[in-house]
Image (cartoon, rainbow, N blue to C red; front, side, top):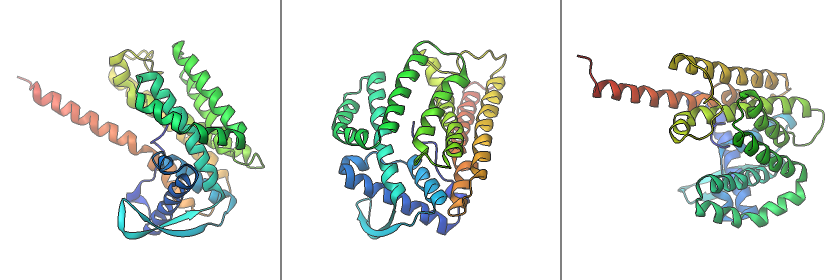
Length: 288
C-alpha cells in the first residue's frame, strides 16, 4: 500500500524540494508526538503527498520548527506542521496498522504482528476520532481479501476497491472539494494497486499466489508489458486531469512533479531490473 507516491528529485527545483522535505519532517515529528518512536518507523512519502495536496488546496499556513534528527545530527532540520499534518499522521498509522496485519496473515511474520499490537492503542484513538476513515479501510481489507481469495479476474473491479478506499482517505473535510478529491484519489489508488501487482507479477507467478494480471491471455511477453503500461498510464492520466481541475497554486509544482514523474520512478526501476536480468541471461547463454 506504500512506496509509490514520491517526488522525482532530479526534476524538482531546490526550494520546492526543501519545502517537500520540511513537510516530510513535519509528518515524522507529528508521528513521534502522537505515537512515540514507533510512530516514526511508519513514516512514508505517500502521506507526505497528501499533506502537500491538502495544504495546497486549502492554502493552509504552517508552523515551522527546528529539531535535531538522529539520522542527520550535524545540522538542524526544519519541519513544517499544519492541520493536514495531523490528519495525515492519523491516516499513516491507520494504513500502516492494516499493512502490518496483512503481512502477518500472508507470511506469519511475528515481528509484524507484534508491531501491530503495539499500535493498537493508537489505532483505537484514531477510530474514535476518524470513524468514517477507519470503517472504510476495514471494509476495504475485507472486500480485497474476499476478491483475492475468489481469484477475481476483473482487474478494474479489484483495483477499484483500492481506489474507493483511497477516496475516503483523501476526502478530508467532506466539503465542496470532495467529488474532485475522490476522483483524483480513486485513480491514484487504482494506479498504486496495479503498480504493486505489476511489480510482484513475477514473484506471485513463481509462488502461485494471486495477482490480477495472472489470468491475462497474452501471446507474447510484450503483450503483457504493453497492456500493463497502457493501463497504468490511463490511471495516471485520469488522476492528473482531476488534479488540474482543482484550483491549486500553492505547491502546484511539487504536486505535478509527483503525478507526472515521481509515481513512475518505481516503474522505471523495474524496467532497469528486467533489462539487467535479460542481459545476464544472454551473457550466460551466448548464441553460437
